[in-house]
Length: 281
Image 1 (cartoon, rainbow, N blue to C red):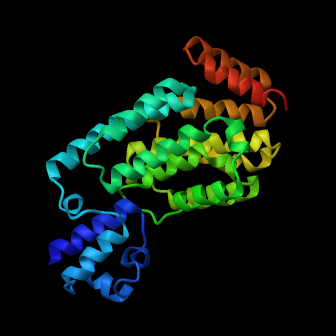
Image 2 (image 1 turned 120 degrees about the vertical axis):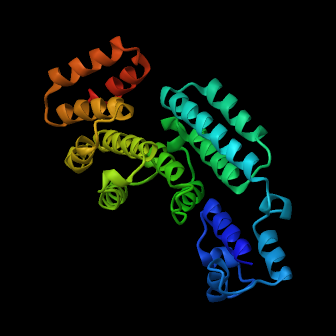
């Protein structure tokens, strides 16, 4: 029965749920906690009801391990492509990648979470769309972002937050960023893809601060970005960090020289967006 407990815990983490949410009122939270730890046996009826509460079939629950691992590798490839396309505003390619994600079978909770995250980013990566979100839509997005962390979905949660930072007031965003900085201080214990996600979050937050004319809130995030390891994967965001640092300090000539380098490197779309947003202040 310990096998069932471990599988339930894995499923709960993929769904981003707390133990209370996972138990869903079917059994007590204390009992459920012991099931995950292999200390209690769960009855068949209770087990099936918990799966039903979360729209998970028995087949999905006992899904083939090799297929699941292959799908995760495929998702990693697709999500990296998606991030690049979303950052460059390539709407057609974004839709194509989401279509590929939707074709993956079986649609495990992990895959469903990924599709939900990519749809949210695709639907809101345009600033005008963000401005038009209703309060209820923003509430639902925040609920997804602040689901309980797990090793499985933390990377995607940070990416989601990075792309949707502008649904928050600047003060709330600052509070969240400061908490993230305190949480992720030990870079040696953070994998490279999560470091990249954090660097994107810092850059998008700083850009939001500048748009809201709150440059004084930028410095902690910029300092954090500067302290990050000099991995090649972080080169672009660290260069952007230098750009924003120069901009905040009034070094406009130095900032423009960085934009020229980025333009020569083929990042015209990004540069145009940054010039329109930043050099008006």
